[in-house]
Length: 248
Length: 320
Image (cartoon, rainbow over all chains, first blue to last red; front, side, top):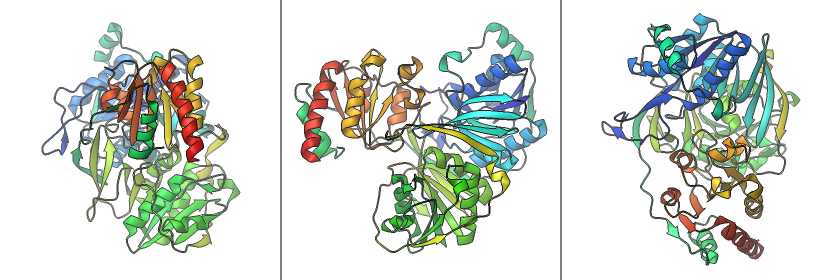
């Protein structure tokens, strides 16, 4: 089985979010970038397929050279090959188009992408990629098994879960549950050394139109101070929630 | 021109999100028509109250269970039949699943997590949440056909009394629409989901163990709320993953969020930032949650929550 894991290069979850250039660009100053957590759950599940079912695992990212350390980390975790499409990621559709080109060429059986990136939260790349490839698609996947050319997946739905089956090729939008937090691998020294020697192929982008444009960013208005209520006077809390916040 | 909305149902009845996307579409449409697409709805005319003037109701047993590809195909055919330039969907798990498929099929630009009516319609610019609610992002959709994914509770319900015609609509579905097969659905009945809830009651590590969740569930019962939890709690297996809210869990956009024994890690606060009113109960006055909350009680949750539950019961009895 050939697996492709799509990797987003995102600010780590503790980053302070600021903008520059008249609030038109994300300020990367002092920001530590990581593998998008939703992608990392998928990558770790792909490692399981590699160990148990002899799958080969490639990773791909659409982005400039600054994203290569993130791809190297994926190689250190155990991916076999990395591919970088050499163009900035501008919108979900453009990224899906670039990924589709790589996916077609590699004839992958299973393509795993995070359900959304934690920076733009678009949540559209996996589905768009599947639609462009005319491949089956399962979103918010919390479990995936493959036997022959049949996959069985569990999808998180509002208030529960759903079991689905589909034949390969399949694209999934992954998230926590594909593996547990405790299954995530911190690359060891051997992995890091090996990763240096593994291929990281840079491919040039296709012409791909964008459909959306992020024109401006804004931070939420600063919040007023918390109103503290005395634990001996919980009637006040109920009164505030009812009359002031109109929340109950 | 018309604005098309995907109005979701559950067991034939419209969800609140259906009325919210309809309200939003009416605002965007101005004088133009709002056309709704519903699947196996029992009373499609209910949508008239929220500004829908035409409902394409699909009655098809093959579509009794949600199927992203088939639903997206049906919506595509409806949009093309009606010449719709704007399609509005909610941000439920199902809508988020089908929207990117529909976007490719309609060659439409898609903006997700939209927080408000468009900033401008020409160019078409919407405000959406990004960086897991740590920022907003104004996105311009440049395609002819546009898809808006409206965040839950972001716009609210607006009544717009009128008449709606209900038409039977039978899209032509292909075998390929059913190539992902739903084998079984495992869903708690009569339980409010985090996505649909007006109120969410959430517990953290401060509750010391899963055996202490009774008072959280009791509060949720009194308030008709969904229960949720912090990441460490789901990681330790005290509560199911489906209850984990935060950056890598579920987002919360309810009217009220009550956090008990949750210190408020930045990833947690990001995930619940869209909740309108936040209450924290914690014994540590230095807990970061107090900076993010509207109302706080400093003290022992094991004393406060049972007392608060009694008072909430009295309040509900009086205000029922």
